Length: 127
Image (cartoon, rainbow, N blue to C red):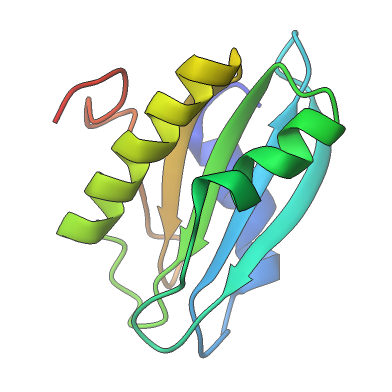
C-alpha cells in the first residue's frame, strides 16, 4: 500500500452499496505490504462504535508494524465528521503507545470518492 488511493481501491468492493457504516483495519508489515484485514465494527446508518482495543487487537495478534484505518460513509459523502477526526487521534495515540504506526484513516464514499485523513494532515498528533 503506497498511497491512500491504493487503500480506497482495495476496500471499495467490500463496502460498496453497504447500508451501514463498517470500520476495518488493514494490517501492514514493515514494508507496508498488506498482511491482514479485519472488520472491527458494523454500525448503523451514520455511526459505528469503535474502541481502540478492538482496533489494536488484530494488529497485535497479526504482528503488524503498521495499520490503516478504513470506514465507509453510506451517505456517499466521504468528508470526515468531527467524530471521525477525534477517533483518528485516539487511535493514533494508542498506536504510538503500542509501537504500531497508524499510517492513515481512509473514508470511502460513493463512485470512487474517498478522503484520506493523512493526506489532509490529520494524523501525527495534528488536529
